[in-house]
Image (cartoon, rainbow, N blue to C red; front, side, top):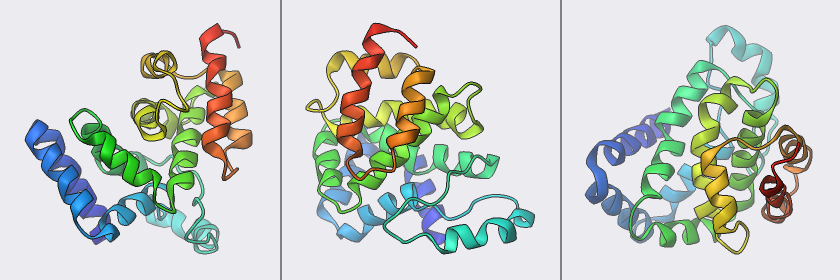
Length: 203
């Protein structure tokens, strides 16, 4: 839980401090111990259960049996959504606005956890596009759509697709495809093949 609180505090500094705080944070993550970036990545995709205590026993086994290199189950509690939107997603979203963010995202692409991070972002984006959207999709989808383009790079998502992703949720058809295929470790290529579906505006 100390790691959870630390990332939330770092995200708040970036949110409140503007360009200087964000760029200082980017430099610290790039020049410091790689473990710091690994912790952010792990909490993003291998998130522990965050929810009411009375529900822990029912889901504990599913979370405990999930290998550290795999996604923990989807969550949509208010507590989980609050942590993600005030923690790792806010942190990456804020830093994506400023200079040198491309170096940070390139560094994330080199980590062993990069495919799993893309998987998590893709699942939340897909859950936003469901009819009706899940709570986590509704609250976190916009942040994930904002992050995923600079994270995967223009080689995967064009500027036109990035603009569409920033403006609206994916269609229900694209959402269903993402959920079906997001467990693949080749998620970056899956997204690259699915996102052009946004351009024709069809469902």
